[in-house]
Length: 305
Ligand SMILES: CC(C)=CCC/C(C)=C/CC/C(C)=C/COP(=O)(O)OP(=O)(O)O
Image 1 (cartoon, protein in one colour):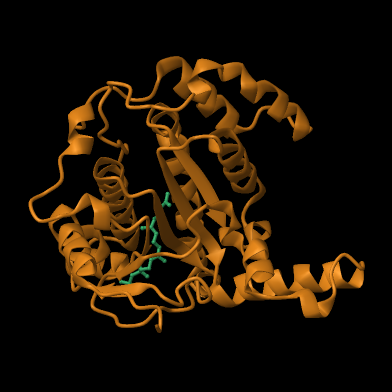
Image 2 (tube, protein in one colour):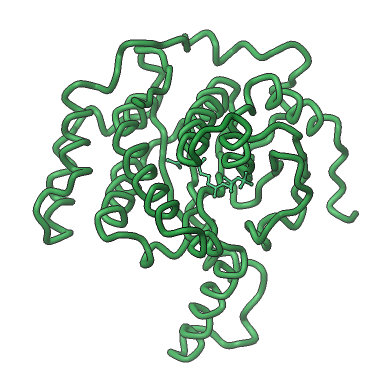
């Protein structure tokens, strides 16, 4: 099934975009000491053709218009989502599991578009947990191919819409081509400023805290810091969310009626507001997202004070 984000062809880009100098990608190929990867050719394709043009519904004025009752001054900067319920969605319809994941990608695209429209700066999604490696091999392989396909097909949109992609997690476990694709996409979009999508793959909160501790221990061993220097700020510099200027989600949404955080961003969620939706992720759309944001805007955040 082809994917498409439905963005306006009208450039909404306010900051300088890599689109203005597509050849910046060329030196990057060389730093990888590798022939052009599939991503690189897909990027070239996207840059040449400027992405898909067939169906768009976002206009510049949309970014000024919020649904009734939603306040721009109380919008969360960073929303995190546990996209749960894709397989159940498929099973309820007698469809193969992969259709559930594909429908989940479409849902993600819708939410990304809404975030851009409503002025949310960062969206983090739990796309594949460290524990998901223990799922059936065929399912894991399908998910890997879905990440590859999804990212390749939307490359043009990321450039045109000024979207930065970051990937967090233990990427060393991913297929080599996917690792390369993700690293390339992160590098190529790192100066995009309108919106940042953080994709957590092969990720867990435990993994993140442990890798941060290992990095600090190494710095201490090398004499760069003293163990007594270690504090919240130094820890946060080593967590994988150091890729964003908003490392702490303001709001966490989990779909599918489950009430747990399942080892997602354990450190970063310390003061996050939680919202649990009944819908399965493929059914989670604008109306439910709005409900979550309205609930968030009514919360009083006291940070223990
Ligand atoms: C390109 C890109 C970032 C794609 C994201 C694709 C996507 C929706 C991934 C979710 C994967 C996942 C393991 C969800 C958990 O719900 P589940 O499917 O295990 O649901 P269940 O609780 O019904 O079993």
